[in-house]
Image (cartoon, rainbow, N blue to C red; front, side, top):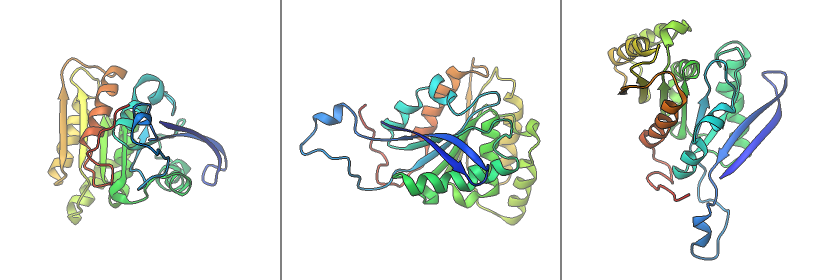
Length: 242
């Protein structure tokens, strides 16, 4: 697995910032394959922009889950960034996530910029932010993952955008939602799920018993989300040995 720590000057944040980018590469089992071997690629990788929860930063997905293993097995790049206290939605942070980070990684790494190859997901606060971003720009994403998020409680305007899309007959990308039934956001995310379904969205809902607001749950269900993603890229359906 290629793991890139990218420190660069951000034109939206007006300072240096760091993001991590996981890019599939040759695994040890693959080094025993037919010769000659090469790092050249036949196609760019699809990409998941993965957002952290409140009180965390971009490293917590990597430290508390097996996201790097899951990304390599499923041949998908993963981009991680920090929101500090801005929820990925406020001020310059919206433009940073929506525009600058995709521009940066797609121009420098073998990552696709096609909407059908671009996905966004997050847990808790990051799940609400993922929802906000796809509702702002539904044509930019092939699918969305929302884990354990109290979106209505965050009061960031997602309900109004859903109502607008419903009134306009706007087609939304497929949405994967999962939450433990002991999570403090359980009722909130169900209410939000119902709003999406009422607006005609294609929602996959996973109700998980005996889990709270916890990393063991997110480790399990970010893997399930990666398996669920509807893909049409050159690597779709080809699980790799790592």
